[in-house]
Amino acid sequence: MANSKDKEPKKTRKWMKLDNAAKIYPSSRTSTGWMSIFRLSVELDEKVDPGILEKALDRTLVRIPTVAQKLKRGLFWYYMEHIEKKAKVVSDARNPCAPMNFRKNDGYMFRVRYYEKRIAVEFFHVLADGTGGMIFLLTLTAEYLELKYGKKIPRGGNILDCNNDPTEDEMGDSFLKYARGVAYTPKERTSFLVKGERANNYSKIITGFLDASEVYAKAKAHGITVTEYLLTHTVMALNEIQKKQYHGKKPKPILICVPINLRKYYPSHTLRNFATIANIGIDPRFGDYTFDEAAKEIHHNMGIVTAEKQVNARISSYVGSEKNVILRGTPLFLKDLALKAAFRYNGNRTSSTTLSNLGVVKLPDEMREHVKRMDFMIGPLLRNPIVCACVTYENTLAFTVVRTIEETDFERNLFTALVKEGLHVKIESNTY
Image (tube, rainbow, N blue to C red):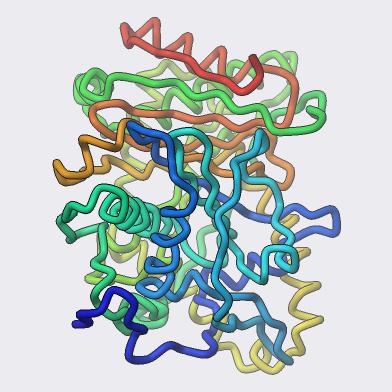
């Protein structure tokens, strides 16, 4: 354990391979600047001091060096190289999750933003998944509060101690470690995609704040989990739109892309990507669904796709592709073309939207008295015009919808249905 506040870790990797899930993201970027970005934020009880925040960031990047990386092109694969130059914090903007210019950002693939009482971190998905991003934000916030108020913040769980050195497990690729080799890739169906008038200038963001205990009680009454309950409402909101758009024509399946945190299955402490996805929903071609019918089907499908053996078969298929001798020997420019084409085709064909639930965030009392709110959002998808994310803190479930079309049908359907269920919903939007 290091004793000095400014001690460097014993060993800093000069370069790192991309983890298995990260390999698609560099190739999926478009010439117009689109890239896969997500954002996490906390709201404090006082205005943020940017000078102290920058000092906290310095220490956090020493503790979590997997974030202090720039993207490099190799002959066969992309890789990451450690950045020695200090990162800067920047004022927040009206357009969260906007594409990053790595060159102007000193090579960094993330940014720390602040505004009034808010600290926000935005990540290019190459660096981490939502869980890894949350650990970074909470550790950064703990460091900031310690520096500002001079009091000790208990560490543990998702709040790392910056006096400790990073571990190999934190920096490792857990896909390679836990895949057992028996692969299975389910056949995916083409799903319904919402159409609308493309919004100009910036993404439309609307967040519904719900009482988490009320949501839990409703989900329990239906015999499903909170995630399944929110999934069902998401599916039903999209189903109402499809009925109008298709005007009696044969409908398509409504499938929601659901990220699955693999740390729940394996004793991994990686701070990089370690999640898989499943497309869950209903097929209206079979007939009209009631809420309970959809909930039951989603519940049972979730039970199947989240079984450990099913999950491992999925990640084994990812790892198997990476280890393929022909693929490994293919030059990067050809991999780029193939991966870009595969992402554009499959990434927009097999799901109607994404719903990522980071679950409940618990903080020690020393942080809770300063942290008043938490938010999570996913940046716009390439062609899917709607994307959803939620996180729960202090009994408030924040459900955020980001859309790139002018039509508000989805949010109206979703939140109206939740209110009709007897839930109290407070709405906040950047379009007011």
